[in-house]
Image (cartoon, rainbow, N blue to C red; front, side):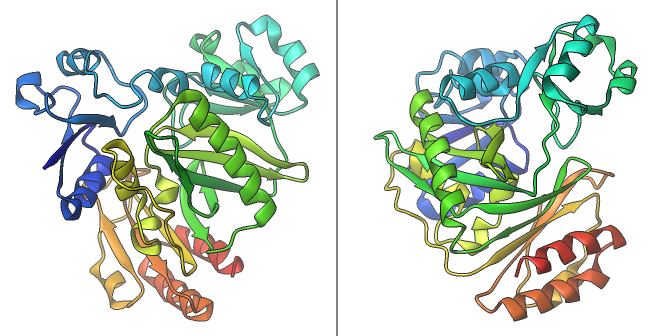
Length: 354
């Protein structure tokens, strides 16, 4: 039996474990503070569900492990500065940006980047945390400890957000899912919609960009790339060197889920192109109590993370897919009264895509 240890024991590690069972792969998600002797890493392939981690007895041990796939890639992508430098090196389109070193740079920042500045911490920060949208009269809102630890980007006028989830094998083989359309609210992904046939021009551009990154880093496994849609084409926003929230629809909407695809890649199993036959929708469950009435709707697949429900916390997701978009839209409509009121706008957005 093949063994995989996942650094991190959140929902992504849990879903990797679930994906490994039918393949005969024993997947062990482990907390960062686990005792090394309690983790069967010696005979395992090592992967991670997070980009960065503190130094602990376990992470020190894993850092020396020869089978830690992408070990040297994580620091590059986990720091937004080195991530942006990678895009520039590969001449990939992004929003204009610069390092924000001190308060005295604000005048030149707005001269160079325009009237809206998007400030992001170089490391950490996710789901809208560690980010600020600032105009020139609002710069005092930025904490002092951000200077030298943040990048600043030009605020982009984009018409939509998409992500590309793909994988690369040890032999350099690459496969990709269709582009996923995403709706974010307050920096958190709320809803994703995907179609078997994406916009050809956007799909080709995204695959070319992500392929260049995967090959440059000699990356193995699943990676997600988030992009803005602009009149000039796609602009890369950020990378995730792991399975990704916007790929959760693949659990029920593709012949191979992103979790299975990642495991196949890192343990050198066959990596065929996943087949997607019907439109899919993923609804993130954020700070929402479990409601089994969702399952009264035959298209609904529930994925519950068994986490304490807290405001702003991702606690599960719902997947729906059907080749009949009318039936899919009707199921989404039937979900609305079974969810808190704030979900209605995201569901209406998804319905507008059909």
